[in-house]
Image (cartoon, rainbow over all chains, first blue to last red):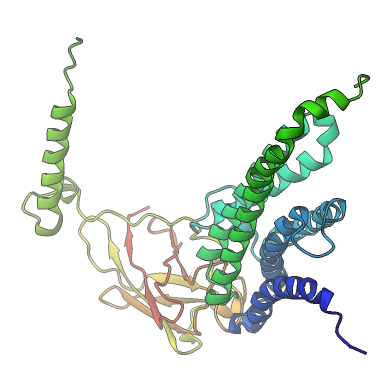
Length: 224
Length: 166
């Protein structure tokens, strides 16, 4: 009798790796000496930002079906739930910072902050808001799915790039090495998933179908 | 072909000329800049300088130890040092956040216009290690400064005021 089911090893390694990439930077930040002198709203707001960045690594992997159990509709369902958590993280991030220092947060939101990273944070925030609107009113907006998907992916790319620039320029609780690691992982995951879903898979699909196109056209029901 | 009185070549020549003048007047001061005629220009408030300001911070000998906020206060125009001017200072430190009263204090300038406040180590706040300084006492125009430390490990930060009469 074996204790290990070897068929599950790739799945465990995949999820384990993703969890490690996501959790390690958060745990390291939790040991930051800066936290000692910070108020609870500041710590909560800051960590909402860090967790939000971590979730941006997981988010593109789900609809792409790279992880065990995320193939097809299941992956897209998880993608929606992680999306909801990202929206909550952004709200908690901005809200926590507002409670900590209203003038600094208002300056950032009005794009008059002296800090160079604020404009990227605000860009990412509006990108997330726009994504939420696009998802909620998908049917009402009445766009064709490929158009909707293109806008969704474009917004996702903006959110990811803006968030990463925002995070890298900030001097705060995150340890620089683990922050860079996470940011590179986020950009890589987004880039690979976008290229795979929008370029590689459509090309491969077309190639697979090409020889059968005439046969498929003949067998297509006339009623459609 | 259309005649253009301001050609690309003349634009480049003009730009080069201006750059040349700037180079001469900058480090060497061979060509006196126009500003010199009106004297030392007043310091302008910095973006976000007044954030978490608590007016009339108490005069203190020190607010902690190990970190120094320093600077000089001069009069606009003739550049004379200003003595006995109150400078208010606040920052996020290891003792607490920026709004925390424990991190707010005032000092008076000495005869040479210089001031210094020893306080607790400044820590990055809202993404940057920085201090806040204010002149806000009426005799001169109000100025709020927000100097950023090049490194969070720095043990001091400086900011200077050139004040214009109100």
